[in-house]
Image (cartoon, rainbow, N blue to C red):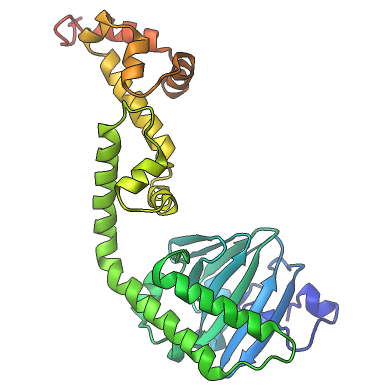
Length: 319
């Protein structure tokens, strides 16, 4: 069996991270040079860890059968961790959580300052169906608001108590934490079917809101979030699924609107600076640089090309 650096150095008795993760790890996986403290409270193992920068994958051939009985609830305490499983990807900051199904392949990457609390829970205690687990595994649960915040704070406090020397924590108390996790999982599963459609509808409403206000130089992420009764962080996370930030989306749609306007015959009677200003760009040099980066030519060149391709009525000129 591959030993972690901690074990090779004769680490603390009972601090066996491999009990929770290492036995599911490929023999050739990178070892980590970090600290792990583990303690069993009843049938639940709680591990607090500072793994350092760590990146390792578990493939199906390396999944240990005895681990099929367990689920992991990963609670990020500091730094960041990325968990990938079943096509899902969770990038966790402090307070965020995710569920890991140790009977299926997954990957974990931690930052150098990452610290986490991992609860290894018997699947029978988790109380969630296999299909629900499959949907939730590797999905980020942002622990800053609502039920997730309550669960995250409770689990963090329990982990702090179990890490204390000589501290006794009642299994019943830890069990309450697992009940909270299960309730949270059911809540998320119930919302999952509607969340995708609702998310698309919400995104469409927000993009429409942005389009209507492209000419407002005071349009900000904060103002858009307030208009939709969201926190800035929630709005940013919603847009993260598109691969673009809110600010990048506003910039791109402003440039696209200006590009479209420059193609119109009516634009030839106005200055390009005025057109840009009407669509939120008050700094003409900044606008020109952004336009060239986006389209590879200056705004004037784009307008001239459009004039050469379209007549005064806006219809394409025939060769």
